[in-house]
Amino acid sequence: MPWKDVMSCRASSQDPGLVRDDGRDCELLRQIAAGERRALEQLYFLYHGRLGRFLSRLSSRSDALEEAINDTFWIVWQKAGRFRGDSLASTWIMGIAWRCALKALRRSDPLPPERGFESLQTGAPSDSTQAVDELREWLESGLRNLPTQQRATIELAYFMGHSCEEIATIMNCPINTVKARMFQARIKLRNLLPALGGAPNQKQDYD
Image (cartoon, rainbow, N blue to C red; front, side, top):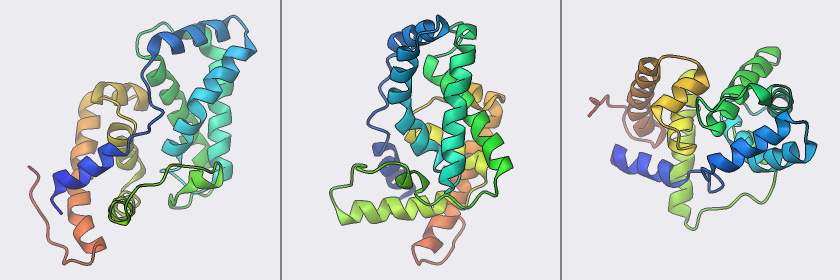
């Protein structure tokens, strides 16, 4: 299958709950900064599933995932008053989650990511056809073979819908680093996916 079709399938699986309502999120952060616990509960409800699906791509250890999520909201509770709107609220929160995930995984012995978040929640939406299921599983297998930084970059872009600028803020790195990781990850996937699908592994040029 052409590379663009594969990545199109990936993009079509973006989190259906990812609705950019920055005004709502900023208001919740303002309320959290004022000590309103109900606002933190609302933010938790809005972001828990989203963070879980992203972090599950980094490890299959549900204990490490929940630790990272809980640490994320604890830091949000403590530091909401420091948010100044220099980025989207979602970008700020994802940046905290990314740093918490790295710390949690360093403290644990990370396993390859294999649908880790499914052990944390049930009722995830299923695809309508077996062919799409197989294609996505094929791509997931490829993603699991990428280094953590590259895998997270691809996930943030294609699954979470973040721009390169937002990813640079989340991962606290230059935008050129994000672009380089994206380039390297796509090259590796192009070379990995044929072999994972049973075809000879033939290297291809990036277009």
